[in-house]
Image 1 (cartoon, rainbow, N blue to C red):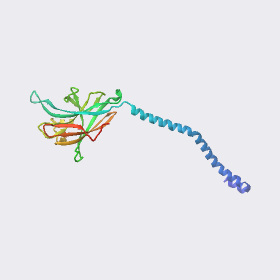
Image 2: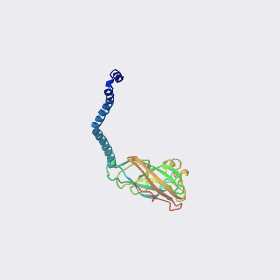
Image 3: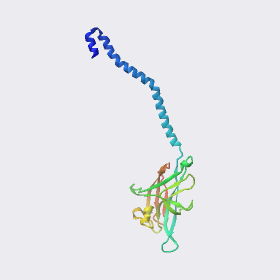
Length: 244
C-alpha cells in the first residue's frame, strides 16, 4: 500500500518502488540460502554421527555373546515308574527325546541360554494339517548320557559346552501301535500319559520345536516316525531344514 501511494504521488518513483518490492523477498531467500549453506556441514556431520551410532549398535549386537542352540541327536529308552500296588517298578513306556547343545561362537557368561522353554507342534506331512501343539518338558537328567530322569521342568538354563538339554517329544508303549505326544498336562489326567487328544497313530509326523528364552529364539524342524510295532519311535532332523 505504501508503494502504491508513493507511485501515485511521485510517478517517477514507480521503477524504483517496483525494484524495491522485488528486493525484499529476494533478500529474504538470499539470507535463507546463505544460512542453510553455512549450516549444511553441521547437518551432514550430524547425519553421519547418527548413522555411525546406528551402525555401531547393530555391530555390537552382532558381536555380542549369544547362545546358539543346536539339535545334536535323538535318544530313546524304556522307562519305569514306581507301582502303587507292588514294590517293584512297572514299565512307563518308551520315551524319545530331542537333545540340544549350546555352541556359541564365543562362549561366555553372556552366551548362557537362560530360562529356555519349548513349544512342540505336530503336523501331518501328507496333508500338511496341524494336529496339535504342547508345552515341551525338559528332563531333569540323572546322568549326562542317560534318557532316564528324576523329573521334568518347563524351563531350564543351558550352559555352553558338551552337556545336553533333553526335550521329551513322545512316548509309546510296546503293546500299543499308537504313540502319544508328551506333555505335563496329559499326566495330570492320564497317569500313563496316554492322552487321546495327543494320539499319534503309526506314520510319520513333522515336528517343529520352538525354543525361546532370554536372548534365545530358535526353531527346529524334526521328523518323528512311529513304526506301530516293537521297534517303536524314531526322531531325526528334517532333511529339508537346516540349523541356524
